[in-house]
Length: 345
Ligand SMILES: [Zn+2]
Ligand SMILES: [Zn+2]
Image 1 (tube, rainbow, N blue to C red):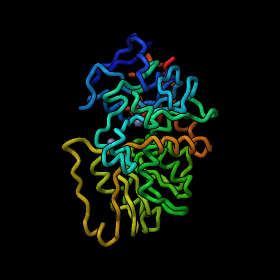
Image 2 (image 1 turned 90 degrees about the horizontal axis):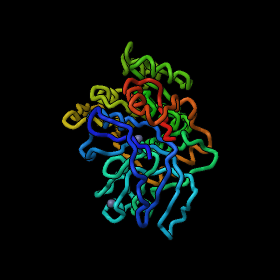
Image 3 (image 1 turned 60 degrees about the horizontal axis):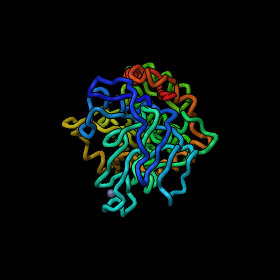
Image 4 (image 1 turned 45 degrees about the vertical axis):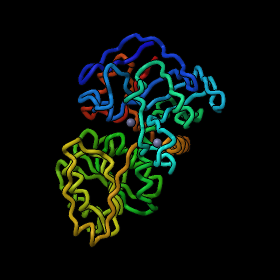
């Protein structure tokens, strides 16, 4: 099979590898393609402590089961599927509470297990057993199916925010995740404002026709937010931009009882934030984190995508063959387009 092999920061080659064997209790999935995640670009540039090269990375995929050795699974050969990346242990304290994304013994596809920038992937038995392989609706395209994983992470983050119709939601950062955040908030009836620094991505975001836009290159985030909300501030702020100063500033955009989600994580050693206690105290603000998603949230994401409520055609802006994966990663780093779909065949 053809596979993109990550050999360390900045080193990726397209190679021919043996098709992996279907593990006992697991499944073999033929992969149609994957979308590039911001984390793939980060791994390509900097590596990752949990990834030992050579490794296949990639995790936002659509494929088809070609072999399955799990007799009691409802899945069968021929099913079109997507995969929840994080594989929980199923037995630790967090797993017992059903919070599988925070499993104490978590492993992940594209970290410890080979990822999806390849023509086939072997799914470990534990992943099949715990529902990580999710059957997808027939009418969704392969490209749309790939959005289920990032959308599941967005669903996880918004679960903490209880967005209500008519509320104002500010999304900072108009990359693919920012637009998915904005789309889901819009579906919930929120008035969405998008703030973005780069001209190119701001232009892409404008096509979605949200209630307001803030060009943070030419205007102050807090001042502009207050102008757009008659000095009230926003009910919810979601910061997808992994920038320390932006996360600190974002707190000041909130209205009374406002909620902020720090969706973008900051680098190790660069993650200290200076947050105004008086603001949090007297305005009764809430600050939320979020990490990854669960298999159940992948199902929820597929259901949302199946309704057609998310404008996917504006989100998947490019398609490239697997041979050009590095070009796609560089486009993603440079903020060209939004989601880039990599065809494996
Ligand atoms: Zn992702
Ligand atoms: Zn666990």
